[in-house]
Image (tube, rainbow, N blue to C red; front, top):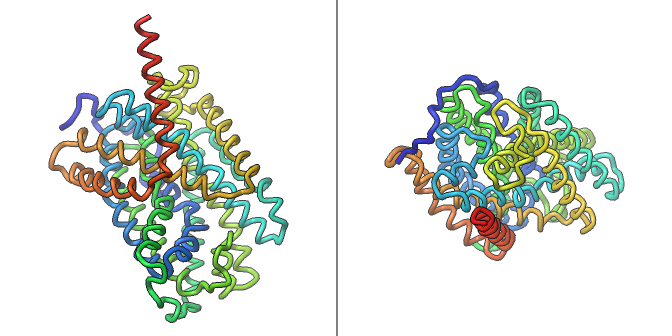
Length: 426
């Protein structure tokens, strides 16, 4: 079915065209996963980690297509929270909004710290300097976004180009060092290892929903968003498959568990200059990913405030074309708090990654149910939503106990609903 609130999708007042839209999608999805996940997945599943990459890539196609269909028809700063509100009501929208804003934001310190790890490793410095470098990566894109989205879109084109340069470069220098013997045994840890690798790669392929929060900034979103999504799916899929193949084919047991697996990879074929170049580009990647996500978080916060899910003082700037500086300041405080916790707990990133991915899966679950109700039946987008509901259910099973944080945020959303209703009746 369709809804009376559906946008026409033909507006051309936005400032971002196909190039900027594609760049934002690629940066949001490809992102920092290239810095850590190929190595982590190889540790978990061995050569079969290539199967895990392919499985998550297949999963991402209907997910990406569904979000593209939703964003093209309902371009709003609220993104998934808006879709859920239209289909399932305000309490469900509040849940999805809280999951994304408070839960998915746990990924921000991971991105910043990964960038810091690469710079510190390349410079041969003590790991004690990682928090300082990581804080820099977090602060710089915050300042950039205060300038406004027009500057962000232009910068993102450059950052995404550099991101692709590092992928092509690492693969090119690593292919000659591939040894076929490293692809056997293919399943050293069984299918359980593949399942773990799939869970890890949720981080790698998450991000299709992030750009929905700035869909209103695109020129002719109904045309631009699907094309940009298709471009991003192809680029991201080929990039991760290529990186996983060379990671398995080149990596040795002595490099397992490294904090900087890409540096180890290029050090085999391009010692000296290779690791330095990778570290520099890793810094660019960290800034680029945060540069893509920060507008999504700030726009979401402003829209949540506009709809009464957060204090209304933060709603300023929720309209398309505006910079939600108050909401941006709120997210900055939250992100810096999460970053401080990461530093205090010894830069152990696994808990943050698990909270991030479980929250993302929860957002996907509600988003896909909403899509089934919002999109016109039997269209391509509707069928992709149906498929995605089934696939996301499998991801929820894999998430298991890591859904505790999303469950707590859901309870918080219900409590807010109860309080608001009592206030309204008073």
